[in-house]
Length: 294
Image (cartoon, rainbow, N blue to C red; front, side, top):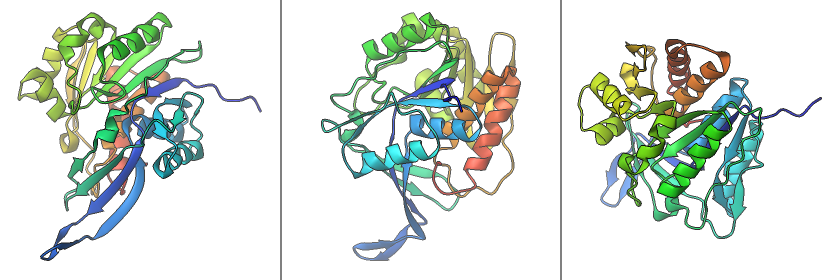
């Protein structure tokens, strides 16, 4: 059987999540929880794994440590069939571990350490001719939080003729801004902020105004992920809101990454903007019905 070649390259975070669900006070110095789960996470890892479940072969470009958490990340990716030829495991890196507290409605709050800065790691990108999409899965967070790195990756992807997608985060330790990337914003085909990230980037409150403001910066298409409300999309020829599926949510961890993976599967299938959003909505709805991202 011929070896599968990657259609999508996912670049960004790969880490371990410690998920605490249903926490409440018990005694003076002790809390109890309904459930505590250790799972892999990170936008790039989640996207790549979900893409594989959708039948789209993905390559993961990330940096992890030679530690237990790093081993867990790589084993999860390998178990899904993800191409790990672009993943770096090094003693100079500490694999990030995120603490996520999930409330009874599936909402979450995260706590991250400085290990998420991934000091000493810079992603390298080569785009073979079979690759159709390059996804910057955690723009504004390491390893995608340095101007020169992001510009280099986007230019490399576009020069190879790939569609460029970017899922965003709110900056933490390094303060990369949208204004730092003005020269390559028109090269971004699809941007996927959630509503909080879009408000941070634009200062707007209305979802469509957020999307339109980002399009005016030169980005080709913007899809604002709005959780239980679905998504709001703005492109050159289309503007619309698409409602979410009505499901019983237990954990929103990874829902945005699942949305992007579903959307990318639509790009590969040649779907319209609306069709891609529909695939994203479906994948996000599947994700929130279980604990953990993948």
